[in-house]
Image (cartoon, rainbow, N blue to C red; front, side, top):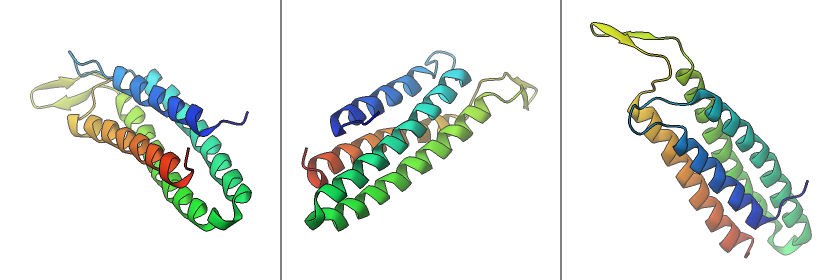
Length: 138
């Protein structure tokens, strides 16, 4: 299914919102199933985005180099975010781990890791919006 630039933005917003929602603000526990589901959606998003920017570069021969270059950069950023999300899901699914004098229950992830994932998704969304408005001019 071909996605336009606006629907890709909406999809990325939903992924970001779902990931933020997968982190329980009270307990800090992470919903591994939701993280994994959103990682798969991000993987699909990357494929749809790649199709979009390649199609646009073909449609606009004069701007093809710029669209391709910036599209590849954003694509690399998206793959990095995806890989980080996969790692995030793996850590959330690890069995309980010893901490100090007790055990850290399964589903808990280092606050820095959570912050990194949220920041990467925010930056990816912001960079995609900039790409859509300045490079694709939509």
